[in-house]
Image 1 (cartoon, one colour):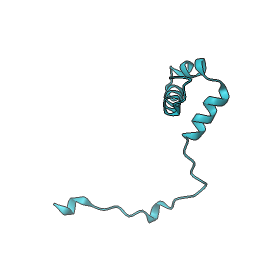
Image 2 (cartoon, one colour):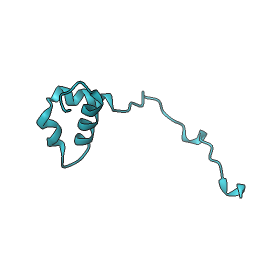
Image 3 (tube, rainbow, N blue to C red):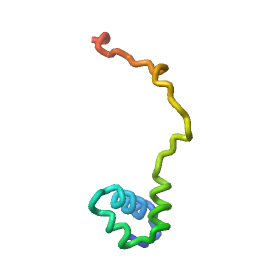
Length: 66
């Protein structure tokens, strides 16, 4: 499963191992740095440089709906 044709397991294994403090060695033991970087980049979030104005956020007070 680690080297098989199913990409979802490799993706899950690398991202889980690398985001766990004590188990990074599991991913580095089986995969090279380029493969690990590819999957970590694939699963990262980018903010695209957009700044959110928090003053424009409207909150609903659900306590009045009782």
